[in-house]
Image (cartoon, rainbow, N blue to C red; front, side, top):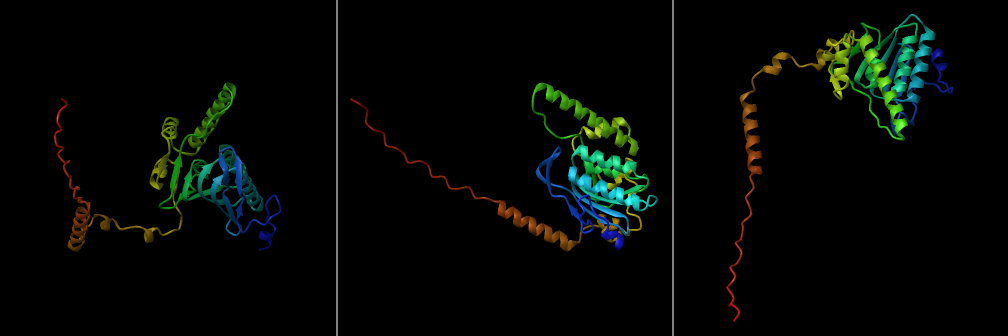
Length: 266
């Protein structure tokens, strides 16, 4: 426990109650968009990261990753991810840190790893990228807008193209996808993958090790069993009520009163 008390962030604050860097304005973040929260678990070398990726949350996560690596450069770090993504530059800062560590980073998706979150997940050590049964991964192209002079917008376009090329190379390096398939997925909007989809594409390596998932699953025979007679009668009765309520009696239309013909002008 003594090592926990000495584990602080760059401002000297104890980080084991969890970190929430607060709102930040910057690239990839809307005005006042909150940072992701980080909760380290030193005893089990786990880092729980939840929320948006921006400069502040990236700083906290990179600091925590480096500290864990210094404490034991041989044991893997377990990064638990539940993130909708965020800033591309901050995502790449975390990715570079993960790649520079002497120890492996095992990644886990709890809920969703979308956009930048998917980059962090796929960058985990091969063979050790895990997803919960109902977790999802989502990848897509960059989002944002350009403004300013014509020259500024051209510079922004070149920067975006460069960022997209970097992301393509990361997915290519850490998955079994071809560059053609990666581009097809990236430029189709939000591309969602279930755990099995991610496994098929070489993005995920399986479910959480040592976890019994049968408690949350439905037996296949239950999915295909015929409905009971009582259930059918109930459905029919409910459908009849709905149909009766849907019947609307058209309002009575009163024909206009006949106007008497007036005498013509003489």
